Image 1 (cartoon, rainbow, N blue to C red):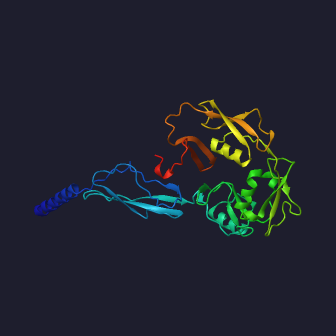
Image 2: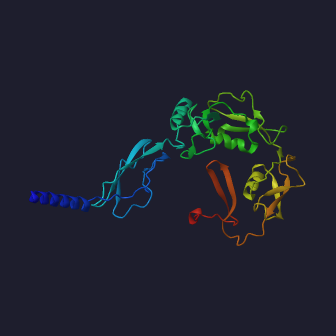
Length: 341
């Protein structure tokens, strides 16, 4: 009897020692976070990661991680520890990839208005305005260009878009500067031989005066000559504020004027930019061949005027900005030799 009691006691002690010596420890991962994340589609892979420093001996691996396409994904973080520790529970979190707020403007060449609307709507652009522009190089009613943006440019989908589509209707040239009418029709695809300016002695010299009958604004053009009226004897002096010296000279030459340039020192103004006419006002009408004097701003804080310098920041439109480089030399400069850093 005493032997049985001793044996039972021995087994209980051994069992106690066995269990006590092999009790598993638990890792403290309270500080480890694995949280949901929402991102917008951008063509790149997105994933989730834990935050916090893992205890020594613990590693993590992920299931269903790394996604590119729009959608919702449950990502699992699996933890592995050392022997002698309890199994570490996995953590899960949601990865949401939403449709992008932006999209790239596609090339819509040869598409008509309905097809343009369909293509842009699929991309998320719905604030659309269509503008008919005279053009004989494109099929009637088809895409010419975006008015304010470039093909391939990335924009917010809420951005209003004005889209130029081709028309054969003759434009209102009373809204086109006289010296730009010929270039307007050339760019629209009319041959130079078919662009005929008919000189007049009266009327606003700044803009075209209309068409020679029977042509008129809105008439459907097919082929043949376009004959427009313009004041060939006078020029209305235009406000050239913001124009640089090369632009001013171009205006003077195109309008058959002569010019003398006088310089005003003002470092707060753009170098070689227009200040005012001397003896004339903006809007004055003068005869062709008149010599006008012009004040041009000059700076004395520009040194070593033998190389390019940045003269102006150009804020054209959303996502379409630039820097104006000024060449103060008399020789062309190859921009391939320069870079912005």
